[in-house]
Length: 276
Image: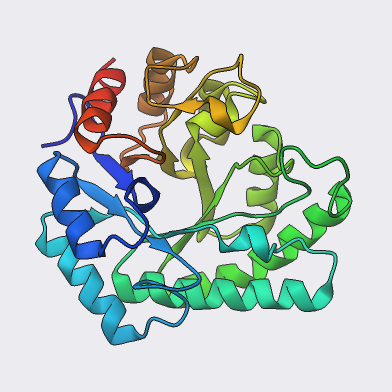
């Protein structure tokens, strides 16, 4: 059954030790009480850009046979090959990565592909990798191109707010999504990622029904570094306000934890913070 309230709970694949077979991860997630799993597309391994259609379909069937739905498909590959690279050849490679990822999402039966829309700089970078204005232009062009590929595969693109010094306000993300003007490009809100730069309840209200998926992790503001990410309830996220905002926009998708921790404890934490 879903967590108390209206939200299903999901778990992201990065929570599991590297190399854990997806069928094993699915069984463990279901045993802990989760309703959804978000697999991760890696550069190599069981689920990668080289995984063929039959293998992807088999993995998707194994996850569903374990009693879980597939929340979406995540990948960190755009950190190494950004859609906003100042190098034309690199941007083309990033687009090709997007098409390949959309294919694998479709074969898995994942309704959403998580996309890192751009990287102006990592959290501790002293210099930008690309001027911000150029990044916006490159991101728009890339998302516009990928929107047609997404539609052809019946897979939504969810652009996530990450620590890439890009799309630093909900208004900016909203305007980019609206400018792309495709029903296939929406927002993937990460509650914990927001907190260093804004307020998740404000992002939810601003992005509203553009939000297609939600990552739920917490963050300790006193840290100021990625070490501040933590289990829900251990940080500074105002969860009652987050839950109220999600209910206000009638969000009905899964709420997926992304991070480290014990599966049973993570599920209990999600139940606690989402019940408000």
